[in-house]
Image (cartoon, rainbow, N blue to C red):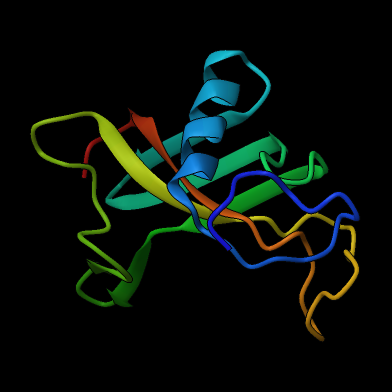
Length: 129
C-alpha cells in the first residue's frame, strides 16, 4: 500500500510510505506530536508520543538506541546504525511504528496499532556520547 490515507474502516495496514514521515513532521511542527532524544553517558534514548499520524490513536514509543556490551569495561556499541547522534549535527533519526493500545481490525496475532511506520529526526539533549 503506498497511500498516506488510512482505510476508512481503520483496519491494520503495514505501511511505511514517506508521506507518513511528512505527516509526522507536520504534526511535530504543530505541537501535536512530541519527540525527545536524550544522550547521557554514551547511551542514546528516544521517546515519541502523541497521536499516531495514521490512526490518530495515542502512541508512546520509547527506545534505547545504544546497548551496553561490556559492563566491566564500560564499552557501549549501537544496536543499529551508529547508535549515536551525527558528529556534525545535533539531530538523531528515530523510526517509529504505531503500537497504539487499540487492536485494529485485521491486526496480526500478537500485534497492536495500525501498522503505520514513520521517521522523525529529533534534536539531541543531554551529554554528547
